[in-house]
Image (cartoon, rainbow, N blue to C red; front, side):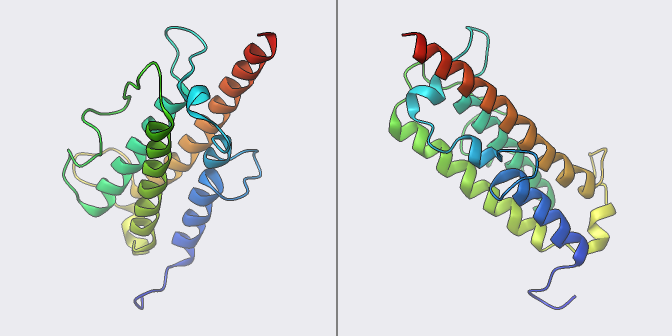
Length: 168
């Protein structure tokens, strides 16, 4: 495949990743759309003491985009912006700078992951990397589904937050 060209298969995957993250999704709001106009107070609010807040969900999504990127590029563990994995606690009183940095982080990681996908040769889509159980294709499709799922979750939390605010 000539440099700078992507296969039809990879173009379809990129469209799916983008439709779930920041383009116009047929399914409703994308992940990026779900956090548009969310402020720090709303991002840090929890529907219950044991629930994740929007900021934690966004960090969780950023982590799994990073994990996908790392898998596609052969990177080593430990390169994520925060220590730990999967779920990351946020302060009870999230400030604007912390929230803006969280949004910037997921945007940067999404673009890195997207760039790694764009470089894939079609034969790598059916590859199962050592130590993994699924093909790169299935992992990429899963990342798109993951974004769509959490976009819906964030929309539900936003609805609860707005109802709570309206009663105040």
